[in-house]
Image 1 (cartoon, rainbow, N blue to C red):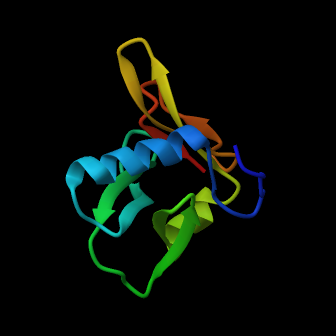
Image 2: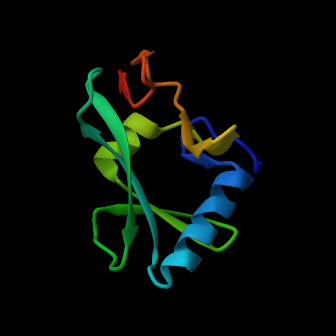
Amino acid sequence: MKSFSPTELNFSDKAVSHFHSSLKSRGMGLGVQIGVKKAGCSGYEYFFNFIDELKEEYVVFETDGCKVFVDQQSLEFLKGSLVDFSEDGLNKGIKFINPNAKAVCGCGESFTV
């Protein structure tokens, strides 16, 4: 992992590698968007999209040539978080270690701030 910053968004090497391979499989795109939206049983949930065009509201994080786009509103929920990629048996995917989350629902899909 790169150096950790409590005021920014941080990415593990595994997460960056996963983003690179996802973009390569897709065959196009500027990068990956991550964000937070109101949804789920606890109030908020994370989402991911591919980005094909740059919008003014994005804050861009670049690590090892991978661009991750976050809108300013989502960044307020994500500051200080570590974005990781985990594999647990057959389950694998992006995982957020978010110090701003006060509670996470039982299924792990949504959180409360």
